[in-house]
Image (cartoon, rainbow, N blue to C red; front, top):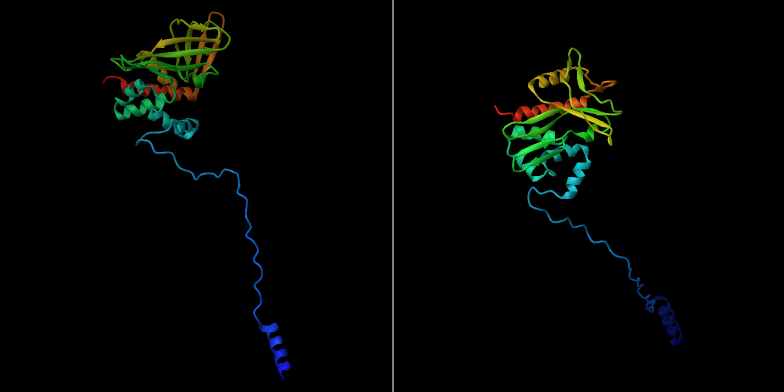
Length: 242
């Protein structure tokens, strides 16, 4: 009887008894990486209200959509030019902003006069017609410039030929630039010249014939030239005393 009980207890212990816990594997240690960890982005501190960084200005100048507005706001103007513009009425400021986005400009601070040069960056590849001179003060001092690019012809006068007008200037003194192969002359922007120029802007096609003693050459007035001429005429009218 005792042997049967002993055998039963042995079988019970083998089937239902408590087993020893399985051995636990040691934790896996991952070696620490030596790579640098990027820090989270932190925006630069904001400047004073209305300020713009040079990066923003440079981006705007490269972007044709924003370059015009940037120039109008005067981001890159000289202080004298900015003061000249900001002291005008709002309507005149807008016109000047349009013009200064196309014309190279300098300023005479003591005289408070703005000097406007021909936009040669636009017309550098050919001959051109442009209004240039000094703005402000008691009166505007402006000239109509005719610039010829090409083989020298030693022009003495010009003839403006439009749809219904042919006008010849008096004898002009053309200044030759042998290095750039240019010959340039200017006409004072008188009321007579202003009337002829208005006919040029209204015409469908205009040719400026440069006439020399032995040769001549024709300058076609393009739509870009007309646009810049109209722009400068509007500025002159806005700055003229009433």
